[in-house]
Amino acid sequence: MPRYAVDRVFERRLSALVNSGEPEILQGGRKGVEKESLRVTPDGRIAQTPHPPALGSALTNEHITTDYSEALMELVTPTFTTSWELLQYLLDLHQFVYRHLGDELLWATSMPCAIDDEASIPIAQYGSSNVGLMKMVYRRGLGLRYGRIMQAISGVHFNYSFPARFWEAYADVCRSRDRGQGFVSARYFDLLRNYRRYGWIVLYLFGVSPVVDRSFLAGRDDVTLQDYGTSSAYEPYATSLRMSDIGYRNRNQAGLTVSVNSLEEYVRDLTRAIMTPHPPYEALGVKVGGEYQQLNANILQIENEYYSFIRPKRVARPGERPTKALQRAGVEYVEVRALDVSAFDPVGVNQNKLRFLEAFLALCLFRDSPPIGESEQALLDENHLLVARRGREPGLQLWRDGRSVPMVEWARELLDQMVGVCEVLDEGDPVRPYGQALAAQAAKLDDVRLTPSARLMAELESTGESFRELALRMSATHKAYFLDLYAPNPARLEELAAEAEESHLRQRAIEAADTMSFEEYVARYFAD
Image (cartoon, rainbow, N blue to C red; front, side, top):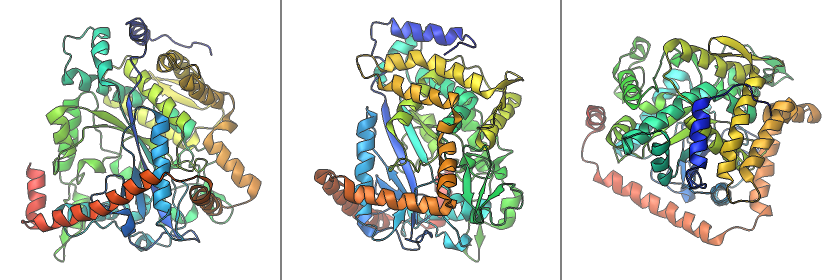
């Protein structure tokens, strides 16, 4: 692979780590996945049934919960140091879930099934406790602000933290006197800035939502997609419409800028958005007819409403806001939110993808990462949008350092630099799984037909199916895979069943312990 530019900072840092006397220093980072899927009926409509009780309480079950909708299931793995263990757990979760779904299916793609109307997307319910009501009202507010249809999109989130022992060596590499949490948080923000610069490559390599069911566009006169048959719409060169302006990158948040130049600026900007009234939302009302329609009328109800490709995270204490957790103890890990659910993988993701992302996050950490100004941020946003909507377009140009450059050449440069990172991650493993994962992605730069978005369109063309027909077929195929093809792990199934039962007890205990009104609870949450 040819070299197109030299990042001296990156090369010095990687060389210093390689020569540190600990060649396996990058190995053992903790990895976890959150995978969302719509529950649908056998004919491909959103399920109107409640979250299955046998799967536990959506409020308190750590591994099986719901996202926006009662029908939008979210499966959450613990963290593991190897991707194969993570995927095995995710597979076990799917097997357990499918034993309690009856004739329902988990939708196999990010973009939703055929949608009758907004009312056909039931908002998730979490019981009568104050914390449960707050989660429900927040979702009601999302529907009010952005429409429920957009909230029916699903995705895969990849959570990652570098090994604890790595940070001491990296402090030496950076010649830093600070070796505590302040150093770790600052370096994670280096990573966040560079993910904003280079994260478009994730959409090209892994985006698999170039087409939607036409019902998804109901009432969206601002959207220009081409017809694909009678019931589907597409963008000819799109990679991820989910991550475009018709998906999460919606115009409602277009004017909201949150800095990742430092932890302080990030918390400042999010806090300001949570505390600043927004006249259009004020016009909708907070309490209407004595019932909460949204948590408040501010630019953001809470931090999680701000959609970004990647987030700095810290496990919060009960009732603690995410920004307060970050202020209290710094960044613990990052959450990559740009992955589409893959129709080609029964669990929605695969090891090659996770290994590539792990190496890519190290690249973002090691590369020089100056602060991002407003003008640069606008161009970075445009790059992501260009790749989401037109990523497979021959000769596509992106903005880099104020000039236009070929996307493919820039992508080759990034993957070229990742070779050394993958060698460190592969140290001691003769199979070289990270190098293989990288080679699989490099092949997509040489042949665009290998990209998941191109594969999906080719599948549609070869079968003559509509988007909804293909997704329904793949959903049924995945269900059969989990129910018929693999022997279950009985110990894991028993463990998940016990967790489900205990989660119901925890929800009842939370509800019994409530002593204040919901209004007071909300006021205290934001006051703290």
